[in-house]
Image (tube, rainbow, N blue to C red; front, top):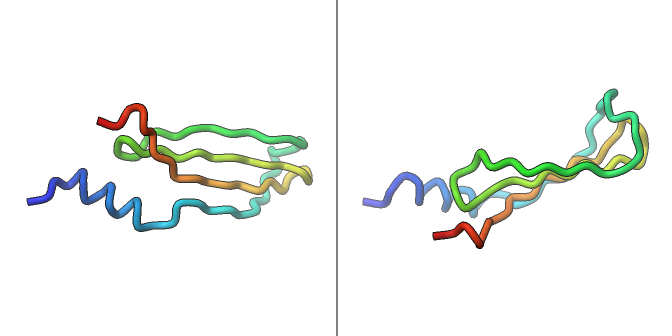
Length: 73
């Protein structure tokens, strides 16, 4: 039997690895870039959120699924 954790990893690898979308956000009253990492996925995966705001209140939100190779065991 295949462990459930391994099945979750395979499902993540078979889905989209990046998403880009414009979002209306009144609190994003700036011009610049912001990023944050989210480690809520099963190890060794994490998501990287990048907000690129060239027009105030209309950031481009890019989400990337990444694999953390240094913590892979």
